[in-house]
Length: 511
Image 1 (cartoon, rainbow, N blue to C red):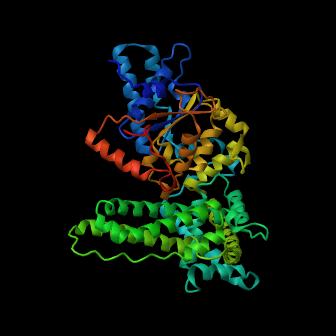
Image 2: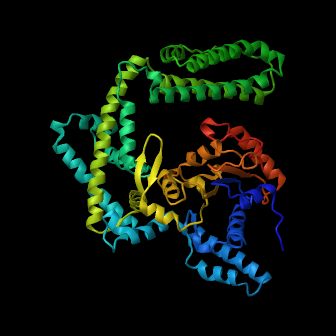
Image 3: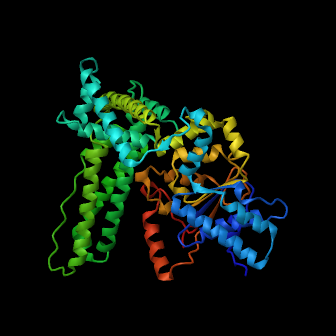
């Protein structure tokens, strides 16, 4: 019995002009679409493909097992309609050996075959968490002991210690080194990333603070904060404007607030750090006039709460984003540059010590699996453009796959995404499905901006057949009631406006 696919689902199943990004909301049938896409490739009369010609990447081992089961179920359903079909029977036999797996399982299998290119022993194994914690603890202690022994020759180390622990103990310093090391593992080439960060901190006599990466970042944060504060003020004004007595008593104060918010916002948009910082520090709030015999306590509470929040937002701008003039900030950044340089030096020392301990015991961790795989697959990498030249090994692997299908793509990190591209055919045969609204694994170094960059840059497949990549949006929810969907749409429209929410939730994304 055939399925009545929506037009968008049919596009996701049948489009093969290039790489495809499928933004699939909860309950939109993304797994069914992915499985049907594979089935149609298997049964294509013009260019049939075997199931072992696909690399199907999932986020967990459990998800991989479930995906394999659903593909088997789809094949068996087709067999029930065409008993004895030799092609379907062949796919059922091949399925057990098909590459339906996590990215770490793929990397492990790849390194088993290419261990010599990574400098690993053939019988290496993946370490368990308790082993890794023990080796990390030993490595960080060794690194810090050496740093203290050499402190007289390295004045930057005391600056680092004082910045994070005030010379009381090493725990905070250990945590920042280990935390930085862990975050670096999500980058394809951590050394190049660290060099770029150090350059961003290097002071320049000619450069203005507002033109630096950190200065522009702080100005952007200040802008977003002020725009948020204005929304609170407008919310309060909606209530005030319903009551003439409140307009008379509160109107002047709120007019003054909005004028100050708008003036500061204009200075920030012009990119004038010193003018914006000076103005921000001088912002004051007029007292609200007293209102007698006004019985709507709830309305008064909402007005005062909204204004208090706007005040807190301005306080944050004054204290965090625009606290000082550019000359003072420049001096502080020069000091920070020394601390960052020392931090990265110790992170590299820790990496060397930790790696040495793992190699001595013939161990790798999950991050090693990814980075060793990249080192073999990538012949050349350009950090500025984020472009990579595949090695001969990568080209050989890519020739095995008709298509690479990645589920839960919103939880991919930079290293994993590079691996997918290196084993694809020039990034032209990737099928990526996910929902950035369901990205909850940033603490595991997932990077939803990878999904968003393609989502925002690629055209809709219905508008333009683009061999460099196109997108399909599956927004229709088949799982929830209308009342639930209406509530979700209302919430997401309010929250997802770009900026903090990153994704702009337009009519296309509504369920």
